[in-house]
Image 1 (cartoon, helix red, strand yellow):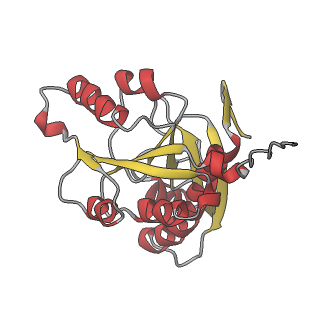
Image 2: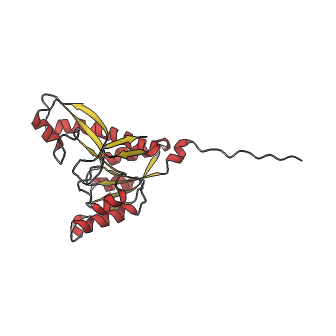
Image 3: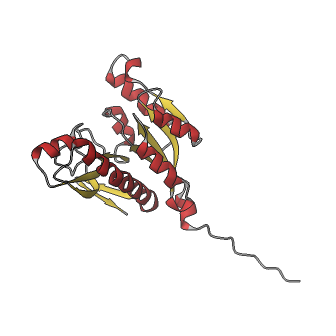
Length: 218
């Protein structure tokens, strides 16, 4: 009598990568979150949104998460005695989901020392300008006022500055002569969503290396 041992099947690469856990921080309508939720439905994307954390209750982004079956949490600044206490609570709320990468998707608060101490180097954000030019809350308006002919968006690693972290990826968006802040921003948002989804997927599948000012995918 003879016996043989069948080899165990090797899972495809995307099946292994799909364990990459994303927590998304939101403050508003959730268009970037919606794009990430669309992408994570494909196992080949390599990552899955496992939690959504907001600094505001009652926003559309939380509804999107709940409709997708993703757990949510709200950590509102007004509920804490100071910003440091809020930052510690935000850190704990995100930590509940054990993320591999944290994505700021329209999140309108700066994170602090506690958060960066735990999730620094693996938190990414988008900005609607070609950094380091025009950081801050009014990047589109400031670029138009300066008279640029090309604007765009950037995906960066979050640090303790204002849109100051290492740049992971950028894409240009031409400025039309008749552009307003609203029309230009809408075109940038389309590119921004696509670029964010691409970058986050590549981080999940291939990794992110940060060395000083230099951030490299894979």
